[in-house]
Length: 213
Image 1 (tube, rainbow, N blue to C red):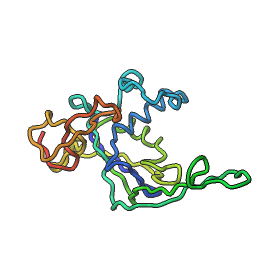
Image 2 (image 1 turned 90 degrees about the horizontal axis):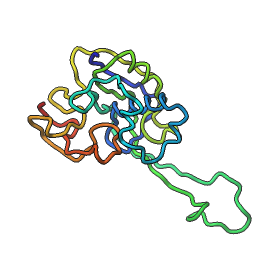
Image 3 (image 1 turned 180 degrees about the vertical axis):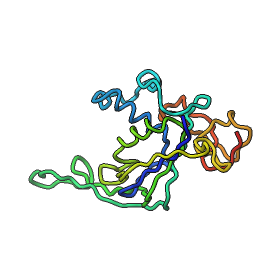
Image 4 (image 1 turned 60 degrees about the vertical axis):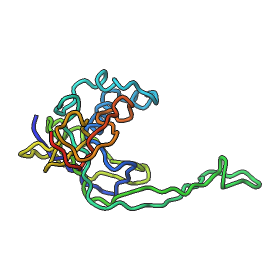
């Protein structure tokens, strides 16, 4: 395994519901789709958290303790808010209907987006396999169904040093505080996939704050 820098060149702005995305979660997502095929789309909403180990097996990322050496996203650009409207596009019945509530309700929605040209990750893993998997990713972030986050191309290149955990003294991903010697800031965060699993939430070093392993 070798240290790599992964750059997604974006075709459209990216929409987020959280300050960052996690590379290990993205890789596991693609692997799970590949292993399960169409069955991926019929998984129960509360999938057992051990499905990562039971179904996927080997992940092409280096492990350090019980987490992957893979950073969260570095996104160039400043966030903005996009307002959009969702209206019913179907034949309406005759007579009076309510557009403010019920089945025919209209919505005014908003999305936080960043007009980013690139989204960058660092990791240590099998470069060729990561290149293959990440080229299967059509889009990043939220609201991809209305055009946000479309990927133009992905570049995976080797680096001289390993930056998946720490770069220039800053944490590059959530790291449980008991794994480090010194940290600047902490918060309850999920630190490994699946990130929705309650048992994966620990008090962690906040990404992009000072840390010493």
